[in-house]
Length: 335
Image 1 (cartoon, helix red, strand yellow):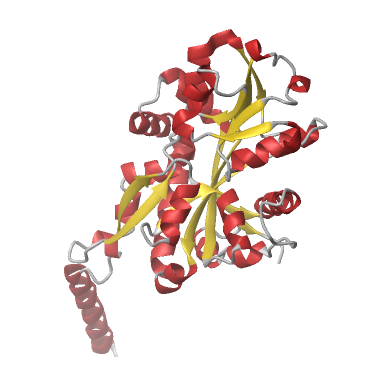
Image 2: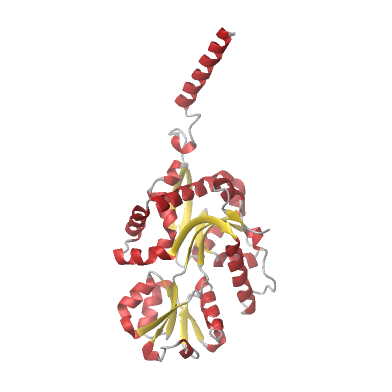
């Protein structure tokens, strides 16, 4: 009996050493003989994308066997469109493009929310007679149409007794925000950072400004095509695991996390200090996201921005299995 026990122990030890020598017990990312999986990620180059930049900078993607290439898209709806065309594997955008695509029954799902932020403003030129919200009727307001900013403008007007028909809405792309408002092509503008800081620096006290979110944050969400998820559920999990590690790093090392993002985006000290607290970084899928999407869908229907007459079932556009396995307890959606 004793000899048998010794023999079993020797065999077990041998198996362990063989496993270590071959890398059998190592994760794919820690095994040099296994090539990392390459992914292309689309995102908006703003501080709200912090967890994604930190996962890249700190090597969390590579630790989980991923080689991630980042592509910038602004506005973020362009990243979603690139993903639907197969040009990127995953994308980070606001929830608004997902609502738009749900009306078109696109093959797309949200994997996780990674941030929520309130940073959109409505600014008006004082020399055009805009000093109070009540001065907005009959004014020309620039907004990037087809984006979350247009929803914020519409709801802002409703909450103050107006609607889109009371103003002239002009489509302005983000790179032209500062020029459009400063050269007088428009009377007012719905904008967000970093463009707001540029406009404030250029126009000073000649503008007036109001928060346009009206209490509803924008959600930064990770999305993928359903066919991609179906073929790569393991990669989805490894990607989310990398972001979970980035979230932990951001919580435990906030100063270092800010420096990573600041250097990546070439932001000033004043800017990063002002904007960082406006972002709530956390991987989750909760009912507040669904409620926001339903609110946006109803607004789109009411303003004839879709031919649909019913709000989509957004549960069909949220993939919970990956996040639930990575961060148990973070999925709280009513089915």
